[in-house]
Image (cartoon, rainbow, N blue to C red):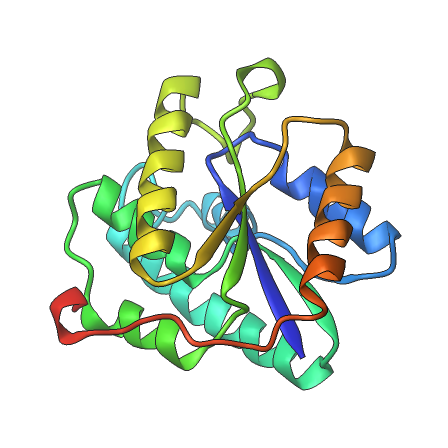
Length: 193
């Protein structure tokens, strides 16, 4: 099994890339946060990121752990539109405490050490019901994600600002050059949680 994360700030083309990777024959896991936002809004719940980020992150953590387990059972190469490290970055960026359970979840649910990050791309940024941030906030979140992933021991591969087809070719070439990386565990120390 090889589980790869695609992360980055909001509106940088992650979901579009995941859809194209699926068309190229790879398995993919949709972004949990977008699904949860739709569900919580439909319920009239305050557990949405702009009202209760801590409560929302708890819901997302449980769903992401289950998503990881399902992908692990399936085997093969799977790409995730965001993953558990993103929760740590979002909580940190908001100045909220990060409970040890988040770091344990990252350590217990290993992804490949190589993570793809989509950099801010103002030219394609669009707000929608699940993406309320401004382009400047999206760029700040990218910086928080970059720092968090690096601190957790991931090797970061920044995606080019290019067509979807070029991004797919970039991901495929990166994987081919690595000859199929072995799963690794992110770093976890007591200092992090």
